[in-house]
Image 1 (cartoon, rainbow, N blue to C red):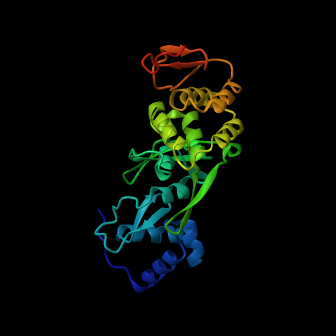
Image 2: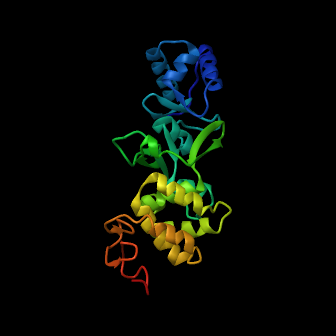
Image 3: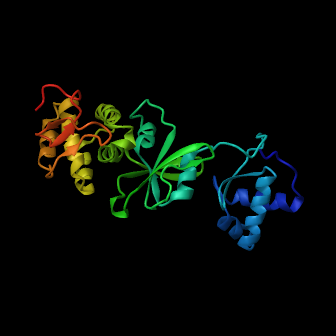
Length: 269
């Protein structure tokens, strides 16, 4: 643990200037621009302040300020969303993290889902005790986002409809298809419900599995939405898909070309 120790007048002035010119995180590049100093010297200075307990290192070249009331620089991340956009931009917050934000679930997830255009080597990093799940997405598939403020920082998050779409495309992003089904029900009973938009988003994404899972789930949880169930049938692709890659493929629902566990549904062929 790094207990805070004193720094000189010049260091205090420089640190104050950096804190005024940054929001949330401090990078070597940004600090160098603020102080108009060589990046090598600034990197050494930030490292020194980290050792003295004034900054907390997130990763090489990236720091966050340590609150004055903290007794150590070994602090947890104050807001993982802010760190995500510093580390993985261009990106947006999605999956269950977005679902929590839009009140589509009451479950509490300890991992932050980040949809990034990068291809990080480590997909489940743990940064200062905070877990992240990174999912790579191409630029052409980035749509349906909202800007939200986290403190003084703007962060992109999938809108409620895009959130449902992403979890239908990859059930793991919602904690599995059973959890995704619950979130879909909450979406259908929320002010955010827009099935026309959901179908439009699904067409734009071009993932045939989405229509199979959505049509099946609508029949189970919202059979009154017959017109949208029919729209799903019109977009079925060839081949059979598992409702969730993590669940057993024990029964084929031929209508939806969908493999489900044997106890998932009764009375459907």
